[in-house]
Image (cartoon, rainbow, N blue to C red):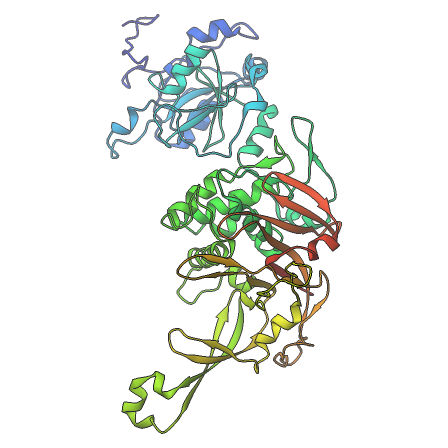
Amino acid sequence: MKKSGGERVDEEGIIPESKRLRVEEDSSPSPSPSSLAFENPLHKLANYEDDDEEEIYRKGRAMNGYKDAEVSLDSQHNNDRVVEKDNGDDSDSDDEPQLSHAQGRRNRMFEIRRDCPYLDTVNRQVLDFDFEKFCSVSLSNLNVYACLVCGKYYQGRGKKSHAYTHSLEAGHHVYINLQTEKVYCLPDGYEINDPSLDDIRHVLNPRFTKEQVGQLEKNKQWSRALDGSDYLPGMVGLNNIKETDFVNVTIQSLMRVTPLRNFFLIPENYQHSRSTLVHRFGELTRKIWHARNFKGQVSPHEFLQAVMKASKKRFRIGVQSDPVEFITWLLNTLHTDLKTSKKGNSIIYQCFQGELEVVREIPAKAIPEKKENGDGNRNIISESERMPFLMLGLDLPPPPLFKDVMEKNIIPQVPLFNTLKKFDGESITEVVRPHIARMRYRVTRLPQYLILHMRRFTKNNFFVEKNPTLVNFPVKNLELKDYIPLPSPKENERLRTKYDLIANIVHDGKPGEGSYRAFVQRKSEELWYEMQDLHVSETLPQMVALSEAYMQIYEQHQ
């Protein structure tokens, strides 16, 4: 195959390396799109040994014997065309990975334009970046591009790629690389550099500065989606993919924990971690708090895929699970993936970790080895140890077995302070596993965020029972020192024992079935919102206390 001027060109349109590259300056001030379609900039390829030569070439100077190469700065501004060097972009077709690693990828010259005629075909209504980045044809996650006209994902942009084929068949010409965020026009192959596409890049990968993160608590401004609906950043609904409401209420509750949220809003804080779960949780956090979303809800699909893989399908889509079990697993897994050493600390432990003193009184006859060691004359063996905790479990009184005179079961009520007496260091809790023992608990260190779990469900060999007892709790100013003994503070330290409720998870329905919803507080206005999947509505603080609380998160007064 021959090209004008006598140069030989191979079938892919690539000039052999032995030939010199000739870049001719266009005589017309604004080339038409039709003329550029025949002069594909991907055909003009060159190899450079260092970046200095690239800079010389960009400035239009002669290099390595290219006497005819001349690109004036005036023509670049007039025509809005720049010749750039593509160092790391996977711009070739699917066949490119077959090349040996030693050979490396070529430094490709491609064109950057600001006057793409197809920008008006971009349809933001169909763009959804919440789902996994897989090609809709090959199901590969390598080098995936999103069509900005129909929203579908395709692999590659070379002549043999699925995106290139789609651009010819459907006439869709604008594509964004989901990893590098560069936008290209296919089949022409040039990169589009237009500021009007920045809003799409922000939705694909939301970004926050430290100043923006610090102002989130003060922000009272609503945002508007493309469909005209208003939403509050941080108060967006989460899509229930299939019985994943236990994940949604957990995520909505953890989003109220300010240090945890601020940590995951800035990816540099956890870029050392190789855990997919950590990065997916960070992406979900940024999408929930992003103020420039195209829609007023977020789908946690990618996060759920990471959860299924990390938990080895213990928690999976389509199977209802317990939010208490999920948050316990999630916090421990995030801590393990974030810490840099075996005894290292993490943002998880900084927020939620407290300390308990546990005293066990075990009958000597329950431990045979104690008798063999000559301790048989002691009736009770006492053991004491201190252990960390992320959550405190509260026992509820059993519901009444018999109906009253009106043939109705009276739902009992219990103050939260009565359930907290379990941790006063004197109340005895009897356990049967691993040995029959009498346990006493005392809190020796309070966490910054206290998670309480009401044990409503009891399992036996036949079925699961739910305790309907209502717990009366304060929404503000929970004072712990009046009900449980606390350690004396260190010198020059103040003992903080007051807590405010920031999240309350409720279970509705029968045990093993039903659904979960959450009440969360918006700190900037001190308003309460009820959140159940996509449903978000403002509610009164009095309504929060009337629900069957299952799990709560309290914030310590600072």
